[in-house]
Amino acid sequence: MKCHYLKIDPEHLEQVMLGNKTAEVRFNDRDFQVGDLLFLRGYSDGEYTDNQAIMKITHIVDDDKYMQPRFVMLSMQKFV
Image: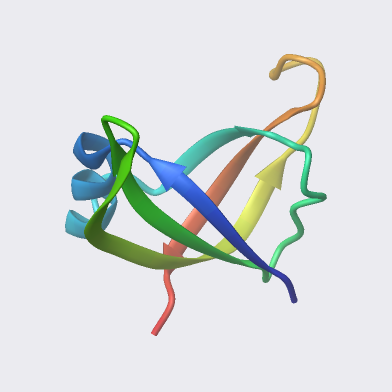
């Protein structure tokens, strides 16, 4: 299990924290795997905000039929 520290716009992070946003499309430059943790940190105007969410990857769509090459869709749930 790896931990990935990622920037996210505050408006998207808010939806993650509310439980409304459960998937994230990302460039796969980190070899994401099911079970890895995502530390989503709010980032705006070149600075980190005070908000963050820790999510666990539950499913990955890595298929050129649905995604641009080297991009993946990460399904995630809150990590307790």
